[in-house]
Length: 340
Image 1 (cartoon, rainbow, N blue to C red):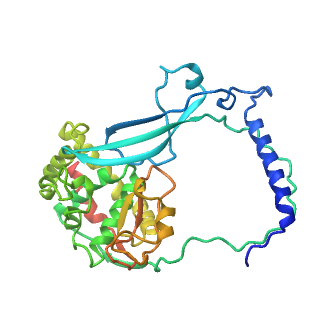
Image 2 (cartoon, helix red, strand yellow; image 1 turned 60 degrees about the vertical axis):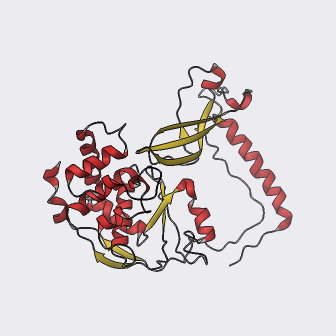
Image 3 (tube, rainbow, N blue to C red; image 1 turned 90 degrees about the vertical axis):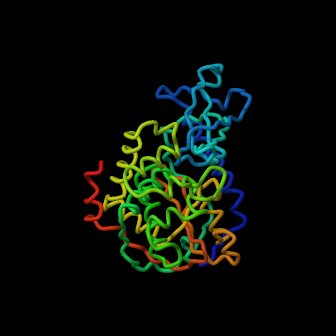
């Protein structure tokens, strides 16, 4: 049913909501003795921005709050201000993955613990139709089961180290790769998908979109370790550190619960881009995955709202099907358990 409003009541309801919000904030600034706590809202400060570059890391999103060492600043800043992320950018340079983060200073607001529970009188009535997610995604169907050899196994683990930061998000990356291998549009093996030119930025040779030789050479544990260390040499300074990272991904990808969650959430989506290149809302608004989708026929884009995800998933390459490829079975994973 379409929305209908009583126009004469709108301003009255706005006044009620405004006064309620003011009271709510006031309560949040009081301590257990009903005294006002310190708040940046009553202090003057000069806002500023910070930009810094660090070793490549996934999972940082715009509007995340960051904790920075501000002990060198006046007390008025250290006790009453926080930082939020306003920009994230990644690049591969000189064989190293770097992440640039922009943050800005904001006033710190006290946690609201004394919630106002008295009733609010809202005037008039509103009838609205239920809000649902975009429905242009084709219904998911079960796709082919994906298997592979040593090159597929080690290529998969290696790319998942660098494309996202937590266990479930890495399982999501893997699901999108299975979907590619089973789509009939991309390469037909995991290793071939991962090693394709122009597809996965961590695998690129410096300054190009061509997959580097060290990534193309992945075929076993030793070559996977070499690729990990070459991609981020300042972090993975020993073979053991690289192997530990590969093991962490292995434990995530073979977990049946994470596999199931990825199949349900990612479905048949084959592609992902960092949120810094466009949010879910922005991509769903245009229904476009890029230059290969000029008419905007792609299905909906999704991104997890738990954990530390960094990627928005969708479809590209003129591929419109929603076939959910099946991950390798547990027997396939188990045969590699002694490699760690």
